[in-house]
Amino acid sequence: MTTPVTAAVTAADDRPAAPFGRALCAMVTPFTDSGALDLDGARRLAGHLVSRGCDGLVLSGTTGESPTTTDAEKAALVVAVREAVGDRAALVAGVGTADTRHTVELALAAEKAGADGLLVVAPYYSRPPQDALEAHFREVADASGLPVMLYDIPGRTGTRVEPDTLLGLAGHPRIVAVKDCAYDLLGTQKVLSRTGLAYYAGCDEQVLALYAVGAAGYVSTVANVAPDLFRAVLDAFDAGDTGRAALLQRRAIPLIESMMAAGLPGTVTAKALLGALGLPAGPVRAPLRPADPETTAGLLAAYGELAARAAQSQV
Image 1 (cartoon, rainbow, N blue to C red):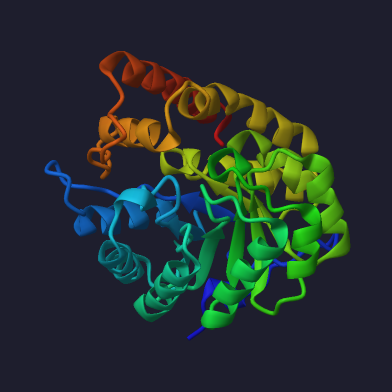
Image 2: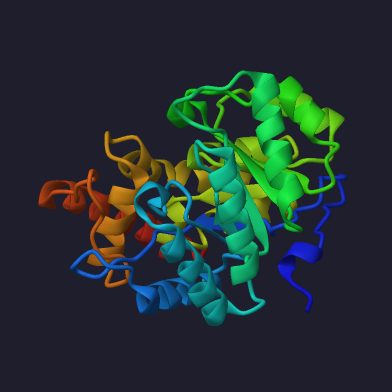
């Protein structure tokens, strides 16, 4: 069965292949009002996101509340979303934990459930040195037959995946991509210039900046509520209209700021907006708390402004 993972997409400028597509959403995990996993809601949300331009979905990542979902829930989510989207989108399952053995178990379960790839974050809290970090990633990549996207987000894990470590890991046949939340443009370009690793912007404000220097695409939290937003940025850039690409990226900033830089986790703001828009989301699980009405009103205002401008320009 051919999946988006096996369909390499390479731009004319020798951009590295995009093993999971270009436009990926870090999908929230819908819950029922009682806090149970909402598999029907997950199916409906996944179908909506793919129909609106996402060619990949990242499940059980940070935005998917992976710290508070069980191993069984993570596997069930992959199965349900695969049922909903079939081969129309690549599914990347978040399996990273602070425990190598547990991460391997989750990787094998994700493969069995039908994932196309694995998202593996640097182990958190224990803060392993770089040689131990490299060994961790290699052990996970060796454990299954799925391609791996490493997740570099030191602001959450306390550990940077250093560029030199990425250079060493790039030779592994199943380590194919990086979700980049390191805010280190020099380090990113160092790895891009010396390897074939596909970089995905993991911070919405950096989508165009990283794409312009050779990234393969993005993994976006904002895409939960505006799934075609950054795809339009990439399409404009690929068409040679860099001015329009920059304009579209700038237009997104108020919504990005409201969702990602207002003191609340993106999971909270995404679920607040999805709920207000009548899309499946449900509550967040403790210790997270829902957005208050004032915050939700501000999010809706930013979303409405962006939508109005998009309608005017027929984006």
